[in-house]
Image 1: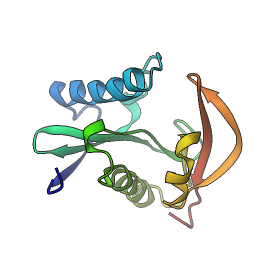
Image 2: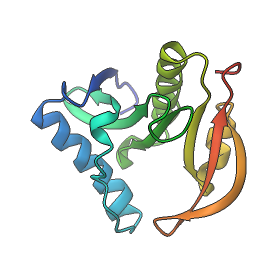
Image 3: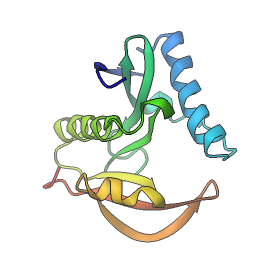
Image 4: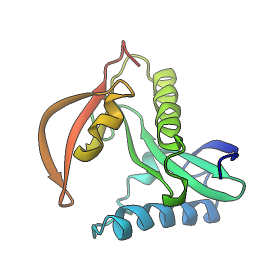
Length: 155
């Protein structure tokens, strides 16, 4: 899988086909609910307000994130549900997806910070991408999280 070519596609909720929506939800449930053994309601009615980044290797969805304009999740814009398929990890796809999300939000909302609610164990991953931690560690769905951000001037 070292010679994979990833195709990134941005879509609004209304633009998602039923197959894309199904693949997106399948990937999120596979990782966040089953792999991380964390029962929670993934279909949180926020997808309708999000921009969705789908990362495909051929016809397989191997990565995903959702992005929000300012004022939806936080005062600033935000990224969430950043995920890569288990067999595609270690290839830098997570970093590339996150960079794509940052670039998108920086272009669309340059005057706003970008906020994420990061799993605390992945804090170093986001620090390497320029994010800074803010506040205390908190429980979200029984997993330690910390708010992280990129200020408008840095993104």
